Image (spheres, rainbow, N blue to C red):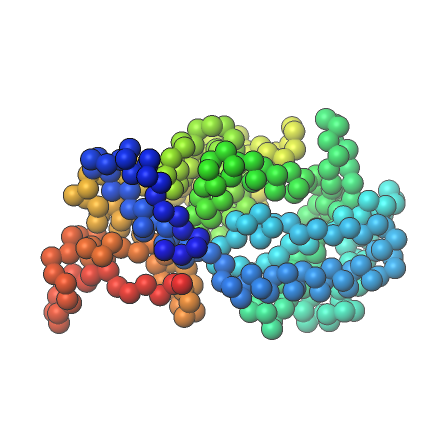
Length: 361
């Protein structure tokens, strides 16, 4: 078992001893490990972040605005999954004059970063400047400028340029990091790995379409914070969180209630993507949650079928050889099609193929 995995506590083993639940602890631990960012990703991210940070800090105009950068995003919150492609630099500017509008602010960031990295590596985005690092496995850094703002409820937070540069949008990324720590403590260190599994589920079911992983994470924050997600083992918490997160997404995008911003009182989240794609994401999570619950509740005789269900839901990721492979391994006594293995060797002409070698880790 990898360092990212965990053994099953003896009290949990005692509690489930004699039951028929195919909880598949080993397979979930391996799946958890198989979606971790690679060692190269973990090494490259701080290098790229520091390089962009140093360039912005050296500019006299931006420095005069009190430039105080921090790392935010999924990497900062330790919920990134492989392959990690982006790192977010949050450029706090506490001394930004009130008369500097969003367009001017972005142009200043663009001016500095273009001079340092060249136009071929720089991309102007809706509310950030993106810098690519082709020598670091294609990693890129999103530099996001922000000014201080006091909400109507007295919260000292930040504002980003709105998409289209027609005003400011409130944000509170440091609160999201604090919520991650709080929920991870409340759920016996299982919140972080479950959010990673939920992000992998979104990638498996929804591909590259919007909404992205942050939307699923925000819905998961709401699900966990409500107390609706059960406490238990990794498989139990994942299945419960999948169902409750699906319900949050369904309420938001199918019923039209929207997603509350868990970091800002009285604010709704702005979620990118077409309405049809948002609804498709919600429905796919609801359907996957139902399938996952059935698999979790199955008798031990149906262990292989249950494993196949989780394998399909979690899908594939880039393995250590740079190819796509399933992250959830089948038990050694199961075939890849979800049937029980009746033999130990694959013979020419066999219609059933046993679980293959693992190429992660």
